[in-house]
Length: 88
Image (cartoon, rainbow, N blue to C red; front, side, top):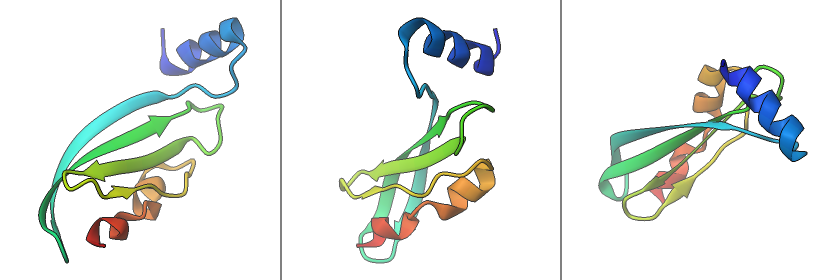
């Protein structure tokens, strides 16, 4: 079963309105103010029928958090994420 089929089936069976596939990544970055950070990045994917399709967020090892504006294009959603929040 493909992602969209799974999402649609979950939504139909459970009367839900938003279902996401979650992908996780680990990023190491040099923060302007906090030195080296390990960042757990989470990408939510609503499938091709949801809009905005993608949402990107993450939490650094020093507990700083970022999120961003969702978008139907993954590259744009990654670029729109408020990574600068990790530099505070």
